[in-house]
Image 1 (cartoon, one colour):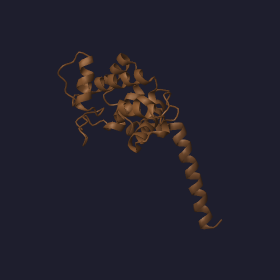
Image 2 (cartoon, rainbow, N blue to C red; image 1 turned 30 degrees about the vertical axis):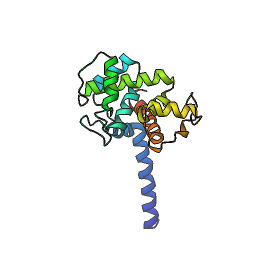
Image 3 (spheres, helix red, strand yellow; image 1 turned 120 degrees about the horizontal axis):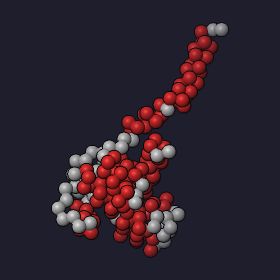
Length: 185
């Protein structure tokens, strides 16, 4: 056997062994756990139970909004882990009986953000439309539904006209699938 054939054979054996190791040692999950952490899990679990929102979805929203950086602010003024606008946060907090809020506080931000998502879900009865409203605002989603751009059942969510919101919904749903795969099987 010549040298090149030996190298190719060794390469293919290495690839096969690599995939066997990944399968049996669940290396993919180990890597994914680093990329998709469950930071602030006690707050997420509490908010999930209180507002009946899946933990994996809350983690996916946080992952895509702030990548778990609790002190982050956007150019548009959204703050904290779940990137809440102050006006929205104060409005939601008022319905919760909270008058003094600190959006950089992880517990507060997660609770208000989860409550807000829960409100949107109850309004639209569809998790995709609720995510679109979380990102673009309920007024925009209402307008898209009334104009026929979106169906009220969310069946044509791919028609979201704002590219950012369209991609946001897709990324959050993909992240949720990954969280479910890693942690909630």
